[in-house]
Image (cartoon, rainbow over all chains, first blue to last red; front, top):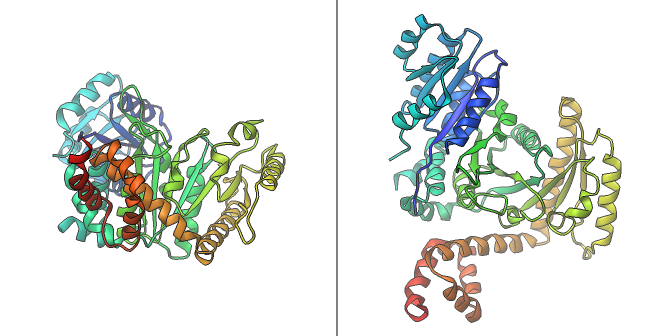
Length: 134
Length: 321
């Protein structure tokens, strides 16, 4: 009997060691029944894109609290596209000022979740918007 | 077969997708595995097992580095447990291996156990085939953190490394019967910690009690120190690498590799049969000696396990049910 399982990756790009949020999310996704690959802190966009492809994930969740999201997030999307994996959904979260959100959406980030977002909201968004493979 | 070609060409995306299809039991994946099966059997498979937090992932990372320095391509299959309550899993082994994330010669794939009890995932055998068909020179299989009985790795690996750490008290006594028997190489990890010497002595005493046939293999004990001291750690990993190589050479020169391959192939065929037919058919196969004859065929690459299972099902199903 076949059953598709959602695979997601939680990653922290750039020079940012504040991983509490990312770990809470990794745990929360696990409890939602997803298979979660957590790659730890201080990752380059290239490491993240390459890991996402090796792990065949449906979604990459990026967490950034350092202020470098405007460079790092779009870079991950670009590298995924360049390597034939533009179908992987990328979402982001962390300390993201409101005025940056539109730029990130334009760059291909599908959703942004900032501090105070209930975990259920994120899980529901993923369940609604990310379907495991056909 | 388009996917099969891509995999033989080393396409990571196609390979990871195929592994996923196997994990998700997608019927089409079986066809691809049949197609690539003749191209498997070349890679060296090394299993790394031990209790949670013993340092398996860090050792795997060190072994990846050592193999890359010798220009060998590497596949890593890292298994972590699935939650029995939600079906979810946190796969965190590759955190220790991320320095290799961008190296095209290294393919790291995490697997969740999805209810398997032997310390591995049900998909691990076919995932090894996929990496093998991609042309990886060595495949490192990291089991879940094991207790006593998760010994299934012996059905897949040429060489099994059991990783132990000091300070676990009389755990040596407790685990004597299960996992202690499957080691080809013991690692005393974190050997800068108190109790490492005692652990090593206890292991030696245990090995002294285990008979080794003349010309046989006595599992060596490799001590590995603090991974935060990179130079010493690399030296220690070098020693471990050398022992792995020696063990493989031993298997080849003593022709024991045939036994290992036979055990591995027998296991694989068993799994395939189980998914196609039921227990009574298996009983019949064992009693008629037909199982042994099929293993011969597989070793000669004259067929693959799925095809053989279907043949048997056609032949026996009516009689048994």
